[in-house]
Length: 192
Image 1 (cartoon, helix red, strand yellow):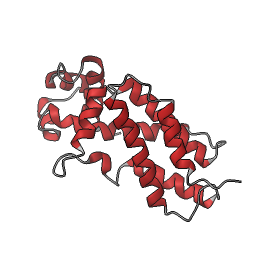
Image 2 (cartoon, one colour):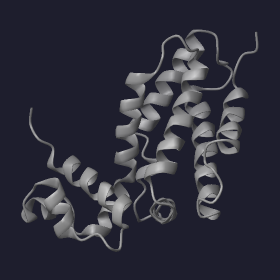
Image 3 (spheres, helix red, strand yellow):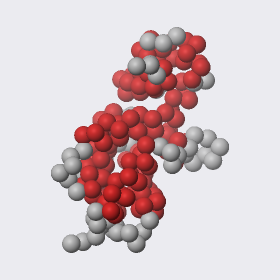
């Protein structure tokens, strides 16, 4: 299997950011942890600051992992809600609030990093797939398009992450925020 140096750099950097903080992590430490040459690092990234924009890669990798663990015994709606709880748990335990805040703030600059909004992200792909399956199984309404349901759902998740950052992570991300996100999804669920 061919090694993916970019992915190795991203994972090494986020491990270090979690352990030491962004400011105290050096490029040399990232290079050492990733097991790559300095030239390889600079081939993929101009500097450490560019790694802040890779949080979407980390989250998408987590979605890929979680998708493989989803129970097919659950309804599609419950699978989507489970993904939300598991991802928010991951974020709460593994993503420093200051780095999430920086990532969210970067999305406001139209010429800056807009990776969280990239419709090609796995985040959007898995949610489109699940919502379409939910519509096919009669769990989710067809009166609203898959695109719009996923858009509303993504807005609900982002708003809860933003709120968590406003409170500096002092309030749990799993609990009321996940219930609010679930409530947005429930707006599109067909009641038996």
